[in-house]
Length: 520
Length: 80
Image 1 (cartoon, chains in turn green, brown):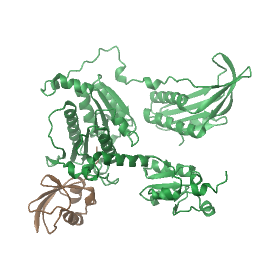
Image 2: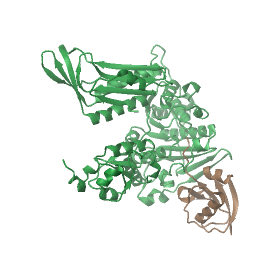
Image 3: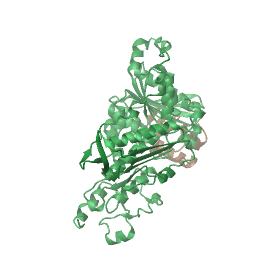
Image 4: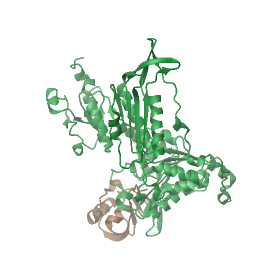
């Protein structure tokens, strides 16, 4: 469903309301913005909204999407009017349906604040004296910028004083080590079977800032290995649950949450804000992305993964000449090749053991405790009760392909490229030369009228979702007359996980050889 | 013929139905050995997707088999 709409005419609110009906929702919150009869002391007769429609819709979709992710609500929609409105008319309508009222209120507030702040919509006021003026939107107070975690709300209770004596007693830790931990910023990616012990141990140890990345909601099938949560938490966003538990465990630390997985466009920037990253996801793409971001930002990374009764552990120090994940397995395996907990199963404590080992490695790095001088992949087999430490020779890894940094840079650039939906080319030949397979998504009669001058597949946009399996596995470029249908189709396919699909920006009309023949 | 000890991890262990085995083979290199095992156990992963270690050291696939080698095949895993 569309999350945001612009309307140049009055809208039936009952219809907007009906679309958000959801059996799992126990709370529904709406906000209506009306045209008021005065502004800053001047009497207003009515007003006029003018929108940069394409941008406003895209940004509006983004805002509502953010609210959905941030507060974990079930459904939300925002409608903004354009055109002439009279006093009392409905200018903005926002509805949010959620399991519980609190998130509904907060998401509603988030949407209106962000809409006022970010949407490219301009307001022209018509005053009773006949004058008119475009009104700029001043900085909006955004309540969510001032939200605190619940653990900090009980000001009346005496402040918690942590006691780290059991670890500061260790000669290699001491007060100096404790100060290092307090100053440390650690990002934990994935708050699941590995992430739960990592977060709990690092919070308990007094790591000053903990970032948590996770886009998932708690499922009942997680509870056998994800020990931060309980049965009442099912359906909630893990990142919020984990933040709450961690803040309760050690109220003196700062918790930052990221409710969406990192992507090629932001991973390196996020990594640069942390001293160390612990990769605990169950996603091979995340493991490779983290490896590349760690190498490029010189951020130490603790990798682990589990399979049934086994686990693997690797510390990527991200120092010059130290090996990385790609030194072992240069290419990310195709989806489905690497084992996962969903498909293959895992014994709960196996994740716990490997997670605890990750936490240990993280503390060793932060405290600069003695570690083996060489680098190794550790294989742990909890059925056999064995572990095997395999030294990694950096000279046999990425060094053969230009070094870890160069390899990571290329991989990240390619991932970024795959992330961009709309790509521009001066000619279709250029697109083919860059490695794209072209797919013409126009209807067959349109293609008959004006066939593409180059080799392409034909798959009308109306059928493309149903026939998605026919598309090539390499980089695919969807092409239509203006880029609108191809852009829409590319986004739909990407929602299904086909990140290799792109759209030709501006369509055929924007390419050179044809542009000359297109009137206007 | 060379006799070697094999250890399987993750998917390979599951597909082989055991953690390891001793094997006498005519294969000359690790790659030939893995190709032979792929047929025998129906391993779904190609050698390119794996790491191989011999006597607790990572190795390249062209390495010749030695009598008594302990060989470990390691696929990447992603569970968390």
